[in-house]
Length: 427
Image (tube, rainbow, N blue to C red; front, side):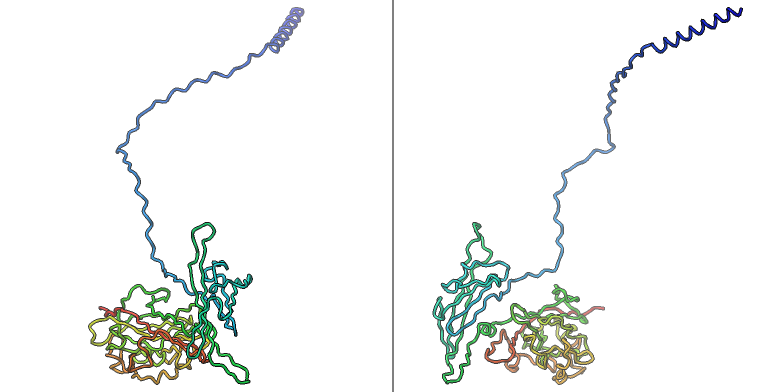
């Protein structure tokens, strides 16, 4: 029995070993990826809309609306680019290469003094130098009772720029004069030359441009509307064009309100009088006054609106006589801008110059005096310009001074502003 059991154990062991050997030696079958199946086409369906589609071409783009902006056309102004020194027997002329003051240099070949070209060129100062004897370069001699005048012509004829048929400047001719006195000191004493330099001649002959403008409440722009109502403040700015002069200061010597452009018409009211005294506030107690001066060549003032008593129309004109002097000229009792604000005050702070304003021919706070909304046919202090008042010329445009005098130069002008309307406020 034991023997049989041992034989069975041996047989089972052999069978297990054989099975293990067969399982390890059996080759593995390679695996292949399955063939992808072709997807089925999706079923197409027609899409429907509840409402029909509408389409049209887009409209043309519209330009953006223009915005009103402050704009003032800038006009060219004369350029101070020519200087002359009248010597004993020659004229010495210097011309800046930027002759027109626009940043564009001219070619020396395009500029001649008569028929003479430049004798030298200063490349540092960008100046062309010409020198001619008094009888050369096409000079023309003229004589007056007191002077010998030699006249030259600076001719500028620009050529096209390169191959382009354009120029940046235009032809120009500048007259240059040398004035010499016909009478000289022939004694043994030194000769005191009295010839007039070119700059002085130009200063004596030229004139200035004065303007009056209605301004907005902030003083920044010219007022587009000329309609006012009683109680409004009419803001006015007086200006003298500076150009290439020495610094200038402008004054309002006298201003007269009228119903017509003629300054001599009646009724009239001189609200600025006595050489720059704004007497309206002193007479009527209004808010009329000069503003503090911020720029020498401008003067601003406000005038409380009024109407002439008994006048059926509210149209008004303002005519002012203006004076311009060099800023080096002191403010005095003939050159001032004085207002009455609890006392006389000068726009530049020189209040001492206003001392004689109180001596004017006017009545303070009287019933017939002009008041906002009511006025008379010419205030007691009105002095209209004309033959009866020659100190205020009816149509001054420029003032020619004697260049031999040492007094400060002074220019006068007359400007009329209007018409503008003064309406009554409704309650």
